[in-house]
Length: 152
Image (cartoon, rainbow, N blue to C red; front, side, top):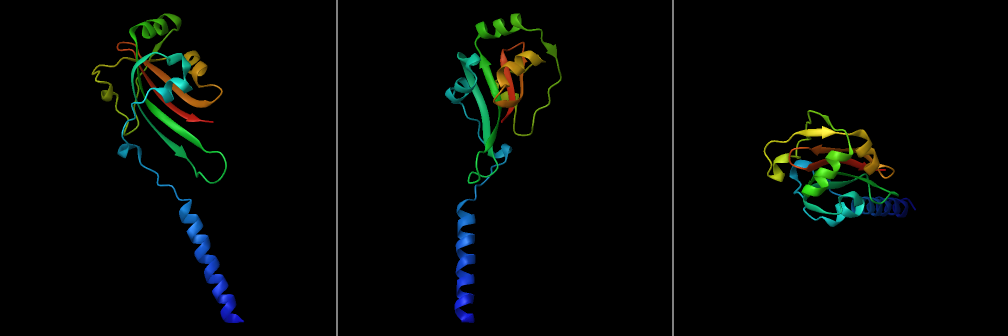
């Protein structure tokens, strides 16, 4: 009886560890991730940017996939058309700011060397709510948006 019980316990442990390993998801550090350049995920989430020149962004799921809903983070740059840049400049009062970037996020990917970052809370809130937490910033010289978001 003891041997069969021991065998059952061993089988249970093996099955449980196999299940937990099958649910494991490798998380890549942001510095090791390549930038994505596909526009559609950006324009679908943020229709205000329906016409953009280019984008460079990174994203990752937060948490485990096998336990209910998971959120994700997104960080990156959107190069606006000249028309969209001018519309944003004329529609909001922008406050100049010093912007520090997370390791692995580099504005030089946009090929603009001198960035002049500004922020407007109303603009940022209009885009992020109700689905995201985070902020949008505008390079008022080059028409580049930087975003740093987490889904809710």
